Amino acid sequence: MPLSAASSSSVRSIAEEPPPKKQLVPARSSSLLLLPDEIILNCFARVPRCFYPMISLVSKTFRRLIASPEIYVDRSVLGCTERVLYVVLRSHATETPRWYTLNFKPFENESNNHILVPIPTFPPIPCWGMSMVALGSEIYVLGGCIDNELVSTGFVVQCPSHTCRYLPSMKQARGCAAVGFVDGKLYVIGGCDSQSSNWVEAFDLKTQTWETVVGVHNVEVHDLTIRSFVIDEKIYIMDRKNSFVYDPKEGRLESDELLDTQWSVGSCVIDGRLFTLGSKNKIWVFDPVTRVWDRVKGLEPLPDKRDGCRLSNLGGNLAIMFNLNKGSTEVFCTEISLERRGGRIWGTTLWSNTVITLENSSTIVRCLAVTV
Image 1 (tube, rainbow, N blue to C red):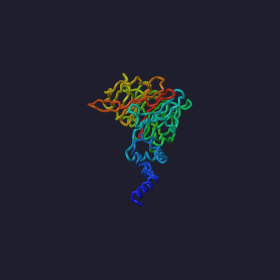
Image 2: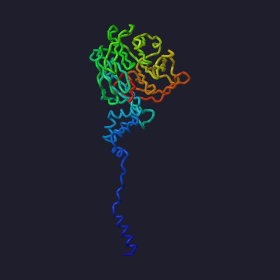
Image 3: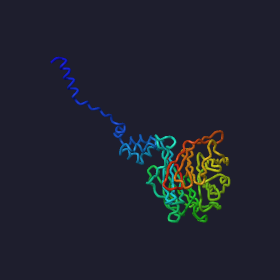
Image 4: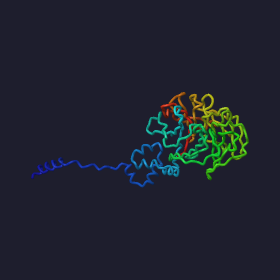
């Protein structure tokens, strides 16, 4: 056969053959699935939580590992924890409080990249009067009103796993009590008849038992307190009329008239200072050492939401949450970074946007930042 004929025949035979199949390169996620669960968890623990919802969509294995409590143990060991804001909203229509968490949405536009996400697995809480305080990755919920009766029960919400455990009951039923952690004990003050022998109780975290605290100097504190916080192992308390400071080590409770000049329900503690939305719709800061109120510089006046707003310490930044308008179904949030310059506190707004729109208007009950 001539060379040209042979070449032509060879070309036809090659053209008639099907093209070779491409070698598929395994996706990185598929390669990761070949690793032991312990190694995958260690990798995921280093990733910011905002990416977890997307990672959960990759495979059932990833979804199981992301939902496991072990990943938060690894995050703690690796020092990759974050401060996450947990919010309780009470619907005006049903009077039922619901839990939410403030989530960051990656890859969204910068003007609207935060959202409140409901947490259906969190336990129900009383319709009003419960006292809540965060410690590490847990939220303690004490007392409150159920079926028009004050209760003495309490439980602890374990935020990483969205589970809870119940505490021994307090000796006294309470509603709107002041709370604070000092030296390994959770103090609960008031929220009941001021003549009660159990007006102050302390829960020892080591022994998991309640004890009555005696010897507290009697002052005229309203039965129901509104706000409390801890600075320098002292519990600051606000009732409907006045402010007080309780020193557990000394067993002394004293009034503090200076706090009354600016302190409002919407307040929080950051770096040992009290921040509050005060007069003229501006953020004010109180230094308990110098005993001076000062206005945070560099910020525009906020909307007139002093009564309905809630403030929280979000990893050293100030988070402010409020309803846009009376009866509004929109909840708005803004985050402000804080900086000390020449003895004054300056603030810079990092972001502001509507974080949720509800079917019915609601009250912002509490905002608590938790380490997870």
